[in-house]
Image 1: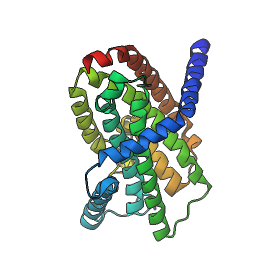
Image 2 (image 1 turned 120 degrees about the horizontal axis):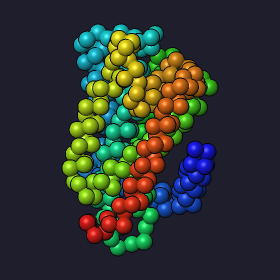
Image 3 (image 1 turned 60 degrees about the vertical axis):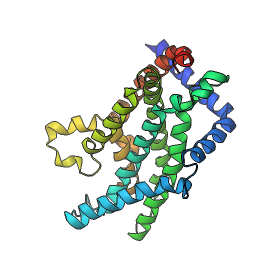
Length: 274
């Protein structure tokens, strides 16, 4: 067990080192990816911000103005909503795009010596850059409600790291399978749609009876969303719920290893299939 854990830590360290060594290439490809998505449209990358903002306004109007939803645990509803909505947008967009990444960049798989495992990561980084803007939006809304971020704000980098590693493991798995089974991308889209309503984004998990609440918390994305709310609104450190932190990293570690193994096992066949 100790040897296995040591091996995982070493391999993960090598993975981070590889990313650092190729950071210039990753950055260049990320910028190119952002440009290519909206190539030919008049507003270009602005569309990446319009859709989440419109959805946010619609949900805020329906729940607060229509259903008269009040503050949740002394936090204004709009702030509570945005702290759950924006990390979910990051997760869903990154997962869907990363799942299609190998197929989208099939010319790199076929014709060039390239680290194919970077392709899902490029999509994740692209979504991250857009997500950083929405973190600023949350801060602007906090200022409007006379709420000032305190030292707890630094842990937002921790939750971003959690989400990036979680997404990397899943997207290695889904992007590899998607090469051989095109329905994978459609399945992920349906999964994300269901997950949006099943995850406590628009509703408070405390509404669920105690005996069922734990099943909601088993969703790793809930750990991220709850972490955003505890960071911005309730000023709670991530180690306060250490049991859930251990659970999240256990699930993430397993998915990361499985995703890496399957991707590496299947990538030698990508060029033949594509």
